[in-house]
Image 1 (spheres, rainbow, N blue to C red):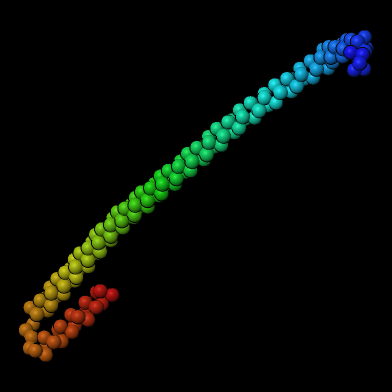
Image 2 (cartoon, rainbow, N blue to C red):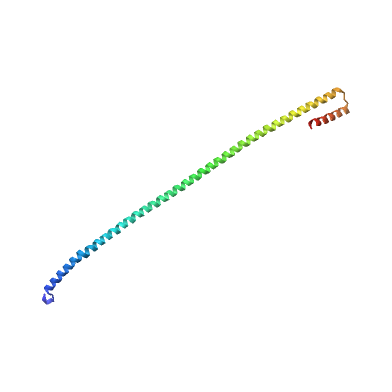
Length: 165
């Protein structure tokens, strides 16, 4: 090997030095670096899993929020429809009550008018009866010709105006 320029003792020493350096680097540099890379890889994997879990929770929360908003919209629409229905019922009831009240007032007014008319008719009958009795009394007292008859009627009418006023 000497012809190639290789010294055996030097080669062995270099191999031993290389082996020692390799062993030292393996135990003190390679293993800690690999361990650190494995830990980092595990942390990255854990972070990715947490990120995926957070994404899933976020999607579920968005779906739940959308569902709640839709439910609230439906509930609001139902409340509006119910309020509209109640308003219509109240309006119809108020109309009906007003109609009934108007009919009562109309009936009462008709009764009042009829009562007043009956009173007026009664008063007219009494006045006419008094006039008739008065006229008959005057006719009985004397016999009348046409001119006297007209004067008697005028006199009775004047007296009836005095009685009415």
